[in-house]
Image (cartoon, rainbow, N blue to C red; front, top):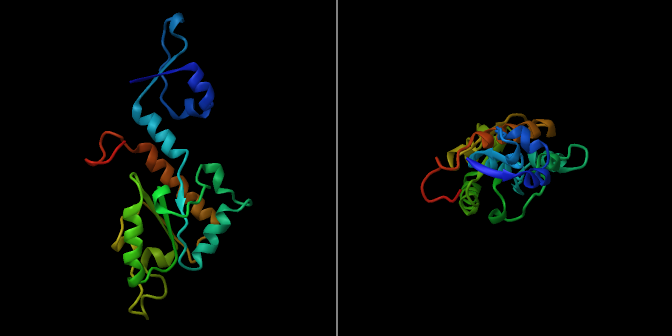
Length: 188
């Protein structure tokens, strides 16, 4: 269990209390102490600051850009700071058709991302090759053949609301993650 003072909780906001299973002490002199687990604090921080990697390959990228625009405002979920380099991002949104030639570059960029890293496959082309893989030898039949995918967002192209729902599903997955049960060699 981890102890957090009341001033720390006040600076984090009241939403933090709802997300953590908080145990309040029974003694009056300990009213400024909050007890929770390390997993819940770390996952709350990860959940509140998912930074996507700017990686659009085709028409789905237009919908991804619209999701970050003021009308849909992906920033209200803590995922609005699109990064231009994989070393600063922890979420790759693969939006569009992945060719066999591009698949190697997708894998290289994924490997350059810091741990923990997450992937959203956006659209029919990134998920299963879309309408192109039947008539072309150059289209990969899903990005999950080169990198692991956490959330699939269906559609051709999917609406911004669908991508927002995919980000919300990813946030739920991050909440259930455990810091201590991760594979060896990764920090927190």
